[in-house]
Amino acid sequence: MSGSGLLNTANLKGRMKVLILIPIVIIVALQAYIRLAPIHAKEWHVDPFTAQPPQEGGVLDIFQTEVSSQAALEAYHAVALSTPRTKLLAGSVHEGRVSYVTRSLLWGFPDVTTIGAQPSETGSQIAMLARLRFGKGDMGVNGKRVAAWKNTAGL
Image 1 (cartoon, rainbow, N blue to C red):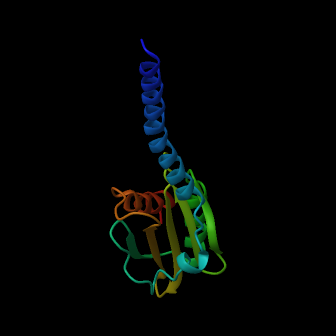
Image 2 (image 1 turned 60 degrees about the horizontal axis):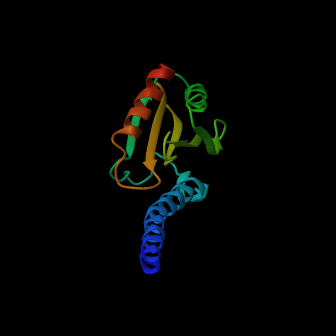
């Protein structure tokens, strides 16, 4: 093999390494952005009773329960915090509104769920607003989470 043939082979291997590394770097950068992008409470900790309807992939469920708003929020707060990969974003039971961030297992996509409670004649009215931080669809994950939290709280 001549010297120029060796150079061409080495050059080809170098180009192939670059072609393999570029997609890996892009994936790692996207992963870092998804996991590290800030979620500002001012934008996401909104009153679910007066908020605009969520975009595709989001859920707004408003319903009645016979328990007090304080007791309802305490129950949902316990359920939310026991959910894997879920953390408190803002608010408190005492405030009457609490927001949580739940991240998907693989990519860590954040979804924000805000739960509000207000007294009603028969107990309390609860609003659960679940939204995507990124993308336009979540394959029903927000709806399933809201249903699971309601079912687990048992109110």
